[in-house]
Amino acid sequence: MIKEDDGIERKWVECNYCLHLLAADPNRNGTTSINKHFNGCKLNPDNIPKQVDDKQQKLSFTKAPNGEGHVYTWKHDDTRIQLALLGLFTIGELPFKFIENEAFIEFVNALNGRLKLPSRHKISRDVVSFYLMERQKLYKHLSNPKIAIHLTTDTWTSSCQKINYMVVTAHFITEGFVMHKRVVNFREVDTHKAEDMAWELLICINEWGMKNVMTMTVDNAKTNDAAINIIVKELPGIYENGKHFHIRCMAHIINLVVKMGLKHEVYHVKNLQDAVKYIRASPQRIKMFKQAMKDAAVESQRFLCGETPTRWNSTFKFLRSAYDVKDAFLEYSHQDPMFQKTVGRVPSHSDFEMIKKMMEFLEKFKKKTEKVSCSTKPIFHMYTREILNIEQHLRKHETNPDFMFMVPDMKDKYGKYWGDYDTISDYVFFATLLDPQCKSKFMKVVFTQMLKAKNKDKKMSADEIESKAREKVIDIE
Image 1 (cartoon, rainbow, N blue to C red):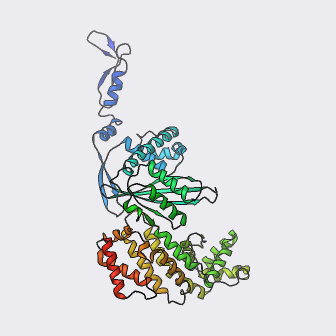
Image 2 (cartoon, rainbow, N blue to C red; image 1 turned 180 degrees about the vertical axis):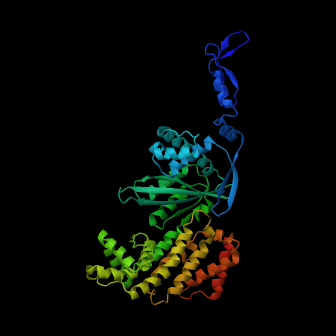
Image 3 (cartoon, rainbow, N blue to C red; image 1 turned 90 degrees about the vertical axis):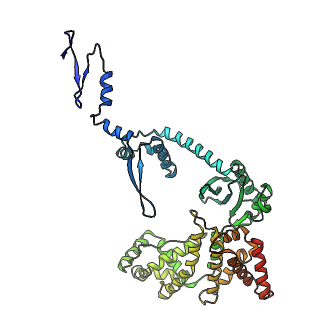
């Protein structure tokens, strides 16, 4: 209580931080001035972080993928945090109820105590709004006639649902030469007929307002070829009436070439397949084989993997995993007396010598498949070099006694798609010409090599081959 000038004692309070006096008479002053001073007191510890955040930016340190460190300023931004939170739930495919997880709430509070998390209902509405906003941005790019759109599509039947699905992916480059890859369609289709597939693709193109669809990459199925022909007739303003519109999937052609060779049964591989199938058929046998790996001092961390009939690279992974633990098979046969009786013969040193040669032969196709399947950087300019490299690899093993029974069929399949330059889209050659490492001289070598491979019956002379190769280069240029 303090006695004022009028002689009346009234209640005053003193700030615990700055010792400032404030009138606190309940009949005359109330608590407004006290609350205002509390929130604005410069010595109040609760106000110091807020003042720093609002008036001064902080330094943040990040590490780039190449290992270089970067320093940039950071400031609390609710909008940026909200978009990052939406990205967490959409890209991470998290259930909306995860926002109410106690551990997640504790984690967020430890990072930033000022952030207020939304409810699961609020974030579900925000995700829908976020989708519509991003869709509108994407529509502006895809409907821009100055941006060339390259589409890839595939259809398949779900093994468990028995439903046909189609996915369409758009590839394009925006200003600043930034590559983009966006899934623009994922829906159920009635059949795999060419007419139905073409209709769905045309609907997708029209829904996104695409005005400059340059190419479409598909698998090498007859229905896809027929669907492409229908689309070419319906799309207006297409370059050279769609002559170069159809791009065949390189990874799929490699798959067909290798599967053509693997259809031949190799005795050593068949013996190993039977052994692995026997071991993987029972949890008890798997446990026993792992113990055999320890007893044989196998250092590899891999374990036996199975094969997928539709993917040849699963055969490569199967061979590699078995080869890395080859010493464990003999040890396992000592622990399981039924092993040799069931499979007939335990995989031996001679089997694994052939397996090693097979792995070295298939390694080239594995690397090529991984290289052409890259979607983070341009690889179209390397298309021509890669297919020639595959042809040289087949030619090298054509006279090898271990593979001469496989290579002829593989070369026939190769020749069906890549043996004649007339069956390859000219866009492939355009991209090669734009590569500073290749240019016209390299293209002449490419066409000459193709013509020589095609001229098995020696109907064309060397001069005729050179003349035709030169004419093709001039036509491309």
